[in-house]
Length: 257
Image (cartoon, rainbow, N blue to C red; front, side, top):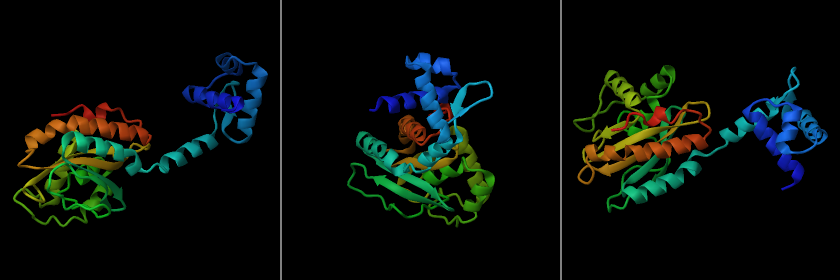
């Protein structure tokens, strides 16, 4: 790497922690102040650095804009897919990743488990809002107007004896999911299948996606499926971090079974 580029990156990294004076930066980089000043002035012209009234240097607004653009360009599926593969291999169950797209929650990735039976879910298709655990995990953290707009689209059709069939009951289930930091589908769409899901957050702190473990009840009843939630939360916390989220991991995993 070019020495000048390396020093410029070091300056940006240091000033991202807190504004620094010229002498402090020179001491940190172990170079003459004139060298640091030239780099600072060059980056200042491009809007990557700014000099405050007290003489210290801080990140410029142009750099902030570049950072936001980079975060917005991150593809959730690319970041999450290695985790889906790892958990599917480790647990033997099917892993799903779903994203909020407009007023729909859509499956964007899926890794089948080791079992011979294949799930009916398909990448690119919306989930059934009032039954899917991934939808509940997302909606539990949405602001009320956004949440209500999506709930208004739900049919609340009964599929099994455990299907939630009213908006009031559904909102209560979302509140419970947010309280415990994970959501479930306990045979609500298909009696013989259950699922647990956790949210994934982006750099704004908003729910960006959700990932879930889905299993046949005969193999993994809900009581045992819940034991895998800490692994799911570990994955979601790591993905959220890579998406730029600053949420404390404890917000996602402090209430595990």
